[in-house]
Amino acid sequence: MLELYHFHGATCGLKSRLVLAEKGLEYVDHAVERGYLRSPEYRKINPNAVVPTLVHDGAYIYESSVILNYIDDAFDGPNLKPGNPLGVARTWWWMKRADECLPMIGTLTYTVSMRPKLLALSPEELEQHIEGIPVAATRARRRRIIEDGFQSADFPQALEGLQKMLSDMESALNKSEWLAADQYTLADISMTPLVERLHELQCGEMLDNTPGVADWWDRIKSRASYEECLGATPNPETEQHRAGGEKAWPDIKKILAA
Image (tube, rainbow, N blue to C red; front, side, top):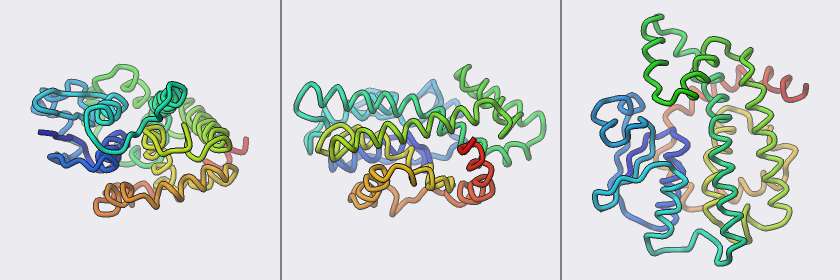
């Protein structure tokens, strides 16, 4: 039996759902609430208190990039890695790149969208929230974001990193139809949630200088897997992201132009 724990709105959860859709696999969908991740029950499933978690015949598999590769190797369906070593290497490079960019998109999301709700908590509740983050580096970064907001040194660094991400994507798409090859691969799946989040946060104009990425994004949205994962079950936090993004975009544009 195949099971997936995720919550709608989690970028890494979306990656796993996309690969399952592309492979045409049926699975038990455990769509949980964000707060459930900190529960003792879920921590028995995933001690890192994050999603996704894949369970295959009782075996627990963590980390979205590992899950993507496992699903592609373990199940029939279209091959989502090229059939040559160089193409595989390029695919893995993009999967690693997506993992590197995850803290950047997290910084953008928390600063623009999540921070106002967290600041409404009592000091005790806020401290409990921060201390409940199990990974020390993430905990420290979130504390800086919550305390300093747009003034945090993390915020412009995240924007610079995301601009570089789009620039790297543009360079790759000038050489091949998709990111790693002339076929759709795990590389494209890995980067899809990051670009999706930019649009949710009303930062889509960041693609204006990367026409290849904009064209890639149109093709991504036309795939059946995108509709299956985001059409029927859109991110419930989209409206919150949109409202925060519309308010923040003028300041973000200034930082990007600096």
